[in-house]
Each structure stands twice: as structure tokens, then as C-alpha cells.
Amino acid sequence: MSLRHAVLGLLADRPASGYDLMKRFETSLAHVWSATQSQVYGELGKLADGGLVEVSAEGPRGRKEYAITPAGRAELHHWLTEVEPTRARRSDSLLRVFFLGELTRLEARTYLLGEAERAAQQLAGLKEAEAAIDWGGDPLSVHGRLAMEYGKRLSEMHEEWARWAAEQLTP
Image 1 (cartoon, rainbow, N blue to C red):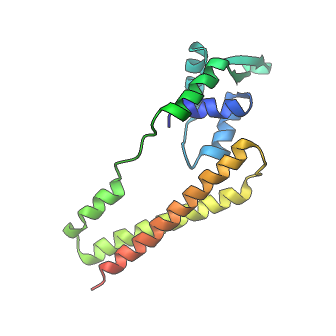
Image 2 (cartoon, rainbow, N blue to C red):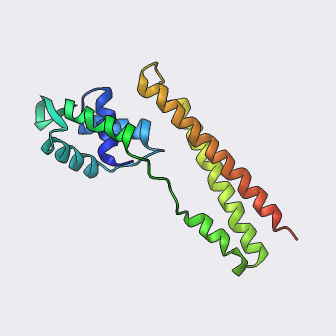
């Protein structure tokens, strides 16, 4: 997923200022795709230059609200239906697992139990975020819940696997 498509997807739901987009990133996409304020504002400029979004309203202190254009919707649709998603093939944490034989059993178990703890903390964070979100019946909420469930299940599986792997190294 690219930042370009994340911004287009959020603007497809409703127009927003850069500030509003940052808030929406924090409350809906933070666990899927993170972005800094400078990245979002930079991307808005690129999207506007490319005709994919336009300024739909201007407010005090130079505040601009952006809306997706028909060309932007076409780009988002193209990306959703015709561009194959990038699947993560690299995992620094799993690469380390391959080389745990270079450590003592205690060090290897400590690493794996640390992975389990990180996964448990991530799961707890997702559950906390899920409880704090005011879910609605709108498409972004419906599909956001699907993505949230994926993250929760993946974190739960990672924790379970890491604890199992640590047990495999018990003398």
C-alpha cells in the first residue's frame, strides 16, 4: 500500500484537511500504515498537482480542505482492482530465528519470549484502540473493523507461535 492510496482512500470517504487526515490516520490506519504530518502534506501536494485531489474549501489561517476528484477515484479503483498487493517477504525477526543457533539456548529462548511479549503488547494495543474507536455503519468503519480483526488475530498467532518456539528450545 502506498501513502498515495491511503490518502485517496480516506478522501474517498469524505473531504478533509491535512490536519483532519492526520487524525484519521491516527484513529483508523495507524496499525496498518503509518504516516508523518510532513508525509501527508507532501502527498496532498503531489495528488493536487496530479489532479487526483482538489482544494474544496479554504478556511482561516490557510486551512485547506481537500476532496478526491473523479481521476482520483479512478486511480483508487485501479489500485484496488488491478494492482497486485505487495506481500511482505522480509522479516527481520524471522531472519533472526534462523540464526538462533548462534546463541545459547537461554539467549534464544529469551529472544523468542521477548517476541511473544511484543506480540501480546501489540494485541493489547489493538484491543484498546478497538474499544476507543466510535465504530459506525459507514464503509470505512465496516472495513476498518475487518482490518482490525486481522491485526488482532495475527498478533495472537505471533504470540502463540513464539511461546511454542521457546518451548521447543527447553532442554
